[in-house]
Image 1 (cartoon, rainbow over the protein chains, first blue to last red):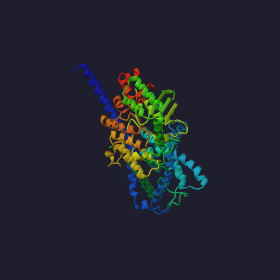
Image 2 (cartoon, chains in turn red, cyan; image 1 turned 120 degrees about the horizontal axis):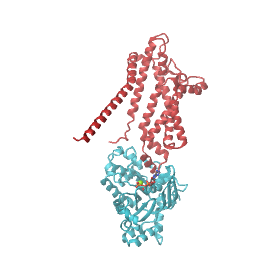
Image 3 (cartoon, rainbow over the protein chains, first blue to last red; image 1 turned 45 degrees about the vertical axis):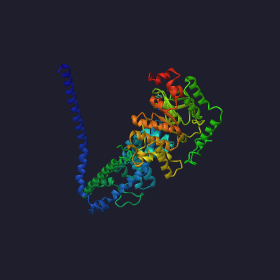
Image 4 (cartoon, helix red, strand yellow; image 1 turned 180 degrees about the horizontal axis):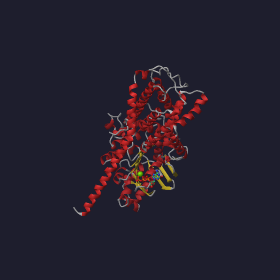
Length: 290
Length: 314
Ligand SMILES: Nc1ncnc2c1ncn2[C@@H]1O[C@H](COP(=O)(O)OP(=O)(O)OP(=O)(O)O)[C@@H](O)[C@H]1O
Ligand SMILES: [Mg+2]
């Protein structure tokens, strides 16, 4: 072996060693990032799972002072408020996303909307709550499920708009052009080919948005408020899991604290499930190549 | 008579639709008129002058009828970049015209101005005229959507929709006033014309993306034929395919040109020569030479043409 190859081998070994060290460092960072997540999940499960029973899932809260009862009304209430928010927010968000991707790629209006959507996503949720309080609760003179849903949908629209835009942009221009060349109006090309091709990503985006909403507390505190009873229509205060957990967690009663943990556990489970479903749905039937 | 009116009436039979009515008229006038339309006279006389070319080719040019497509001093711009610099071409109907020329000379741009596919590109601009059946397709009252039903297009890369095979072919039929059954029949007819029927008839509900590249491209041809265009634009339709799949599509082109006016962009000289009746050589956004294929390849008028077709010019 001559000197040149010898030197080359030394360099090669050093490069390889560096490479291995970097990889190890990155692995360590991943582990560090996972520690909080895993510890939250396991701690909540440990504290919460014990208090989850049929009563907890089927009953409304027991009267103050009495023991037992559950958070069934809060679970249903969360479903109602988040569902209503999704109903209002997703269509608006998807339409905005279509606009951004199909018509507003380069024009000024598109740029402004995109910028605002990004800013809106960064606004603290308590501020969104105050806005909804001012716009909905004050004029209607009542806390309500509707007001809570409005607050949540304000958070949902920018998120869905941006994810829908991304989803639509991933549809290749080839397909877009093929559809246009067949002599069909642009709206039909968008509605039937583009949205169809992007539907996996669209559904995933919407579900991830919903999962995020399900965990919000601040925007609901002074919009949906809370309620110890089954829901009484969209124009009455309503209980949600997050607000109920908050209420019970800071209360000075041990059994309420235990129920707060159980509520947190149920909430986490629901959110995880939504995420899993979202990612499973992301696979589309005709998009796959065999 | 508006050629781009929706042909809802009697969509099923070709005869009776507005466009075909007009074609019958041009056919008629060509038969009655003492001389064939001027453009063909140009092509055939230049051919005779050039080479005393075979009477067969001359006869073929004679029997072709009036041009279905005519570009007149066509200039196109992407922003400030002038891509086509005054192109005048007349393409006779029911024949195959090949556009050849080095990369970047504007063949695709020319093709896409014929069905206004460039309308959506920011900064794109057209000067001059493109006539289809004598009508300026860039006139303000022409609906590009309806124009594209007459002028179909097949692209370089096969681009089926992520739908089933059947849904791909019927997708373009919305708004044509066809029942489900009629759409299905139309799909079958188009798949047969595209030479794909036997391969897919038992798997029409399967995802189109499971087909091979060559099959996908024939599916795209079937999809284009389903809306019953008169003109078919093909932009290097075989360049992404293997030789066997290419041969299949070439054979198909020979069939298609009996019924449609086909405009083909090709980088493959052999292909252009085998399938085309006329051939236009583009260079830097201008048409250097246009004439019967035999003449362009055997006896080119221009030094640059002969350099290109013999492979001396890239
Ligand atoms: N969308 C576009 N925006 C800006 N310029 C473009 C666009 N499409 C094409 N051009 C320019 O127009 C010129 C001609 O391009 P065109 O695609 O028509 O060439 P071509 O003859 O089809 O080439 P090839 O054989 O490589 O396909 C090129 O210089 C290209 O850069
Ligand atoms: Mg090209």
